[in-house]
Amino acid sequence: ALRYHTGWERAWTSPAPKRHYDVIIVGAGGHGLATAYYLGKNFGITNVAILEKGWLGGGNTGRNTTIIRSNYLQDPSAAIYEKARSLYEDMSQDLNYNVMFSPRGVIMLAQTEHEVRGYKRTAHANALQGVSTEWISPERVKELVPIINLEGPRYPVLGGLWQARGGTARHDAVAWGYARACSAMGMDVIQKCEVTGVRTEGGRVVGVDTSKGAIDCDKIGMVVAGNCSDLSQMAGFRLPVESVALQALVSEPIKPCMDVVVMANTVHGYMSQSDKGEMVIGGGTDGFNNYTQRGSFHHIEETVRALVETFPMVSRLKMLRQWGGIVDVTGDRSPIISSTPVKNCFVNCGWGTGGFKAIPGSGWAMAQLMATGHSPLAEEFTMTRFKEGKFIDESVAAGVAH
Ligand code: FAD
Ligand code: PYC
Image: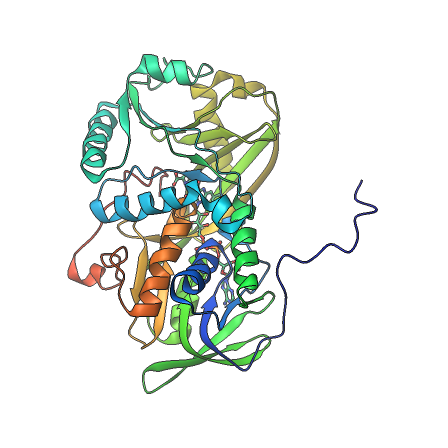
């Protein structure tokens, strides 16, 4: 069908690297591209290269299950995730690129008394933070999700935390939309360009070594998710982050049967239906650190078992594809958006299992931090908080078992 479709205009250019840039962003995932975009849009900084070792969006950004919500507990988290969620609302217009944001609503099921208390507490916190969420009864859950089994052989559904303006977006389109906009501002998006070294002089960053040669720069932003420990080691400091595989799978496409996103964190599985009709399913992280973009097999069985319990119709579905990504997990399950011990070297990582929803807010804050040295949205997310004991504990809101 595409036979006669030749001569398409490229959405972004693929130039050879220049000798020098004002800013180098390492990693062309959603967070790196959004950082570059807001550097240009909000601060007029466009002499920027975004260096990507593989293909654009080929990391976790292109591997995630696209859930967007801002129902976190702590104030700094609610602020940045809600900023992100609100930027998703008009991202398609802003980028003039359809990212298919679908605010269809997200339910986090409560299946133990402990979860009931936890989610009611989150709903109260969200009310104070100006984030619109509500506690809903099992009957309301059933109205929203007719295919659900409220009884559950192990855990009955006792209610849920509902965010009506949460939802999903097309993950690749988010990366492609930002890349096109960056390229249109004159930035260089350079793929197949692996950063292999970070050069410093007198404690400040001066450039990077790459598979396409050395490139000088005034500032560098490391935005490489599961590879952040490697990058920080190149620059001479360590990050309190562990890298671990998280996986997902999709079923064969079926007729529309569920028009909200459901997360069942006690039995541990979550599910939504894609526009193609596939049921998009995910579970917990591997229990050991690794760099395989695959995930352990026993997790598939555990995840599907949890979903069969919650949605009995899943037992009759065939699964089509399974894949994994390497997520970068911190001790308090909150991200790091921070300056580092190396001057003019900044890091954005630690989004773990939940950074897709944060992409625009994170890019907004990181660009502000890199351009001005300070960002109100990022100020609590320093890498020094782990030494100072100022944790931002989001282990419940993360929703995915680590
Ligand atoms: P990435 O998209 O991984 O981008 C980093 C880039 O850096 C990569 O492209 C990589 O190739 C590049 N890179 C690495 N090292 C180098 C180097 N040396 N030189 C040059 N480039 C380099 N989040 C949600 O909010 N909702 C979800 O539903 C959700 N589901 C998930 C499901 C799965 C299976 C997985 C794996 C993750 C999920 N996440 C979810 C988490 C989310 O995907 C990530 O937090 C987010 O995509 C991170 O984006 P990023 O831009 O930081 O990283
Ligand atoms: O952060 O909402 C989330 C999420 C769901 C699945 C993986 N992460």
